[in-house]
Amino acid sequence: MSLGQFRGILDNSPVVKNLLLINILVFIACLIYGDNLTNILAMHYPTNPEFKPWQLVTHMFTHGGFMHIFFNMYALVTFGGVLENERVLGSKRFAFLYIFSGLGAIFFHLAISAGISYFYTGTVFLSSTMQVSPDAMKAVLQIYYQSLVGASGAIYGLLAAFGYLFPNTPLMFLFLPIPIKAKYLIPLVIIAYDIAFAQVGLDNVAHYAHIGGAIFGFLLVLFWNKTNKKTFY
Image 1: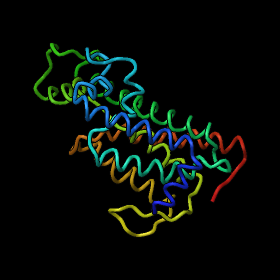
Image 2: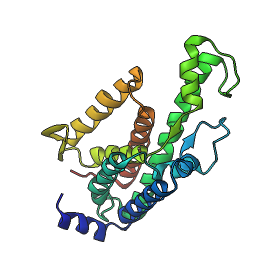
Image 3: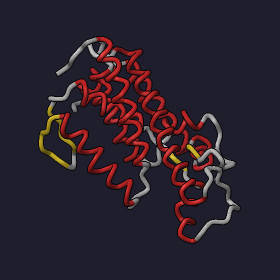
Image 4: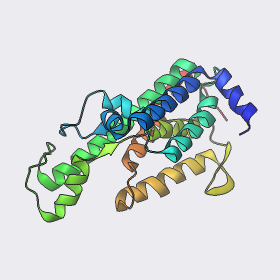
């Protein structure tokens, strides 16, 4: 994407522009004020004393490092600039899609976390003093002390929406420099990357949040498209 294309998208996409600005300002604020501010904004498990209701929203505008925010914001501008176009979703629906996908992502993640907690302990109300078996200890502590940040859940909602509305558009990702239609590439990323890695737990990425964001984003644009009787290519 050239600088001219970048400016053009921002000039014609006010919601994308404002979301980009908010994310950058929060990122700078967290660099200035350090981990204390990040911890206040990050999402914690609801029974953890660090949890605050506003974290359901603020975690979506908080990032853990430069590469984290760079890739999320690059995807926001790239796909959001298309989706916010008045001939596609328009600004109001695009803003709703973004927030709806982000909230859906965190609720899906929390639901999976609660299910895992119940499986190991018989309760979803975790605490730092509860007694669990050694086999369950790692999973329980990881959930109880989890601290989630990032716009990825909302971004995955945009990816799913784009893949549904523009299925035949060729896309290329940095790690796969071959043009592949969106209807194949986006599900491939979700299935091959997130579902697989969510099962093996080899990294510290909230894969279930990615999956949840994609599900909620897809269902929302499916509903809108069926209601409006529109098809995009």
